[in-house]
Length: 352
Image 1 (cartoon, rainbow, N blue to C red):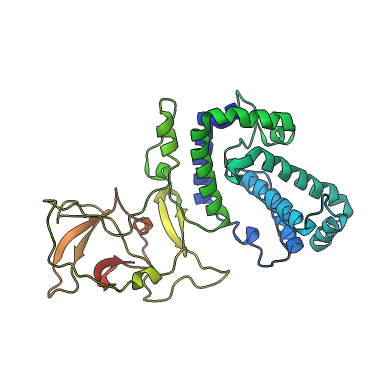
Image 2 (cartoon, rainbow, N blue to C red):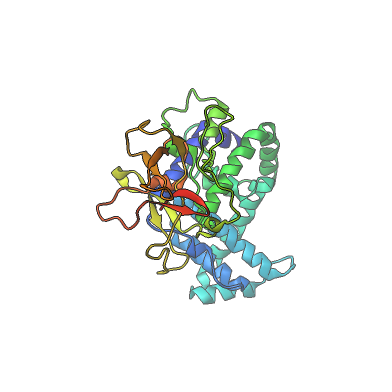
């Protein structure tokens, strides 16, 4: 297990998970966010999810692992400190699912699997679930079933061995945590491997491998490197207004549109809900401010000053190397959004 997680195959699996999530048409968020505070009802929802996501793909297997983990966590809460699971709790779940008693063993197996996952993850947290192989692979031959069969001595030995590569495992686990945030908390996180050409990993150093799984850091505002360094712009205005910070957050999803590449999909906070209203600002486009005519492609946008007579074009906003998720808005023959340049919170900004 240690060799499997520390191998370069783990990086490949992580990149494959990101790509699978981008291409996924069905989102698991609702299934993993029961609206009730009742432990048994929540456990029922997770048990249903574990049954729903058949082990067809790596992403499905990961979702089953997470469902098993959360199912058992809710059952443990229902125990309220008891040392053993009350049979009544399992019966309640079976009744709510309208499953026969013959399914009891399957639910008890989910509980056993969860305890095994929790022991394996240890202090690294559930993010480690993204790193454990999903199917038996060459060389290490570690699979999900292999992990289920591990005994306590094996797991203790695993923890001792990975401690020697603690920094590497910690950074991988951080990726796993971010991946789970995307799956379960509706967070949208862009990773470096999505903007880089990832070919063969054989000659990559450890730092290079880990850098592929680092999140892209979005600049909070446009980046500009003045020349000379002490240049002071006489058009800047101090302001105490910060209405731009009140724009809706997490109402979008980065999605893969096949040959068209990545794009942005509006996402409401509830089923059949409304993500944005007509003429509503969505987010500011941020990038690097460069002189006029520096670039002549779709990654650069001319920036004019709407607060000056004749609205002169003063520079370009260049988004290829520095920019936030708004730069991923894709072309459409019937667009439902557009870019406008407006003064927002006392600053001229490119707004979506």
